[in-house]
Image (cartoon, rainbow, N blue to C red; front, side, top):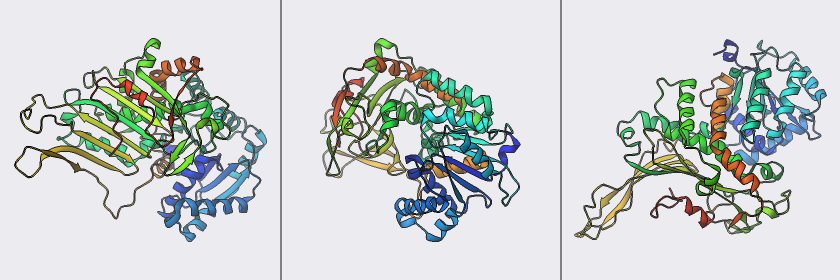
Length: 494
C-alpha cells in the first residue's frame, strides 16, 4: 500500500452534501463515528452544496437532519462536537472558481501536520467528470498519489461510459487513491458470509451444484424514488441496483476461497466469478430478464402514486422500477445452478436477503406415509431489516403419524446488547485508514457491465411497452417465467 495512504487525512470534502445520499447515509454515519470516537482528532469536514447558506446555516440544517435520522441515538453533545468540525462552501460543481475557494479553505492553518484529503463524490454520476477535471485544473488532485477520491455507484451507465470514467480518473489519480464504494459490501451479513462459508466445515461441502438447487438474491424496497427523478428516470433499477449491489452479492456468494485474506486476493476471486457468468445473447434477453414499473397502490395502508405520476418523471416513461434476471456461472462449482436476482421499489416489504434452496434428497423415503412430499431445505442470509443466518430443516412432530414441521437453526451472530454497525460507518472508516479491501476494483466493475450489457442494449431499443405491478405487492407475476422448474418460486419471507 502507498505509504501516503496509511496516514490519516486531515480534511474530508463532501461534494453534494445537501443531497439525498449525504443526508440519509453519509452525515448520520459520520456522526455515529464521532460518537464512537473513531474519527481522527484533527479531521475537518467541508460540505459543498448549492444552497445559500453560511457555516451557521449548514450547521442548523445538520442538527435538524441528525435529530430526525438518529432519533433515540441523538446526542446533543456529540452533535455539537461533530458540527464544530464543519465548514460550508456554496458553489456549482462545474465552476472552477468554487474549487479555487475550496483550495483556499483547505490551505488554512489547522491543528495537525498531514495534508491528505478525502474527496467524497456524493453526487449524480453525470457530474463525476466535471468534478474530476476541476480538481485537476485547480491543482487539488496534486501531488499525485496523496489524496483519496470516493466514487459512488453506479460507476458509468454502460460498459463504454464506465471505461471512459475510469480512464479519466487514472489521468489524475493512481488506482490506490480510488475508492469505488458499494455499501452492500460493508454490511455485516455480507462480510460474515465469508466466515460462514470458509470457516465452517459443516457448510463449505454443501456449497456447490451437487447440493444446491438454485440461489435467489433479493433487494426489495417499499419506498419510491424520493424526489430523485432527475437521476432515477435515466438509471432505472438495472443500473441503480442490479449491476452493482446484486452482482456484488452474487460474487461473494459464488466465489472460491482466496489464498489469503487481503484486498487483491478477494477481488481476484470475485472477478473470476463474473468472468464465468454465461453470456446472454441478444435473442435470449427476454428469457433471462424481466422488467416492470410500479403503478398506484398502497404501502402500509397509505395510497401512493404510480411511477409515472411521481414529480419530475417524464410522461409515459418506461424506466423500470423492478427487474428480475437469471444467470448461470459456468465453472466446476456452479455449472447448471440458476442464480435469480430481483430488485424493486414500492414492493410489499423492505427486505434484502440471499436465499439458497438445497436439492431434494435423492430417495423419496416417506412416500407411503402422510409425509408424501417434503418441502426443500433453505439457507437464508438476511441482510436487512435484520442481520441473521438461518438453516431450515425438517423434524418429526410429536405424535403417532409421520408428520413434520420445519424448524430454523438460527446462526444469528449479534447479541441483544450489540448495536449493529451501519455499512457506511464501516466503509468510511476504511477510507480514513486507506483500507481498500471492501471496495471495488475496476475490473470488477467492467465485468459486471459485460454481464448485464446485453440486457441494457436490448431494453434501450424496446421503448414501446413496460409491464406494471401495483405498489405494495411483491411485483409482477410475469417475473415467475424466469424459473427453470415449476416447483421454484420467489422466497419472500425470512
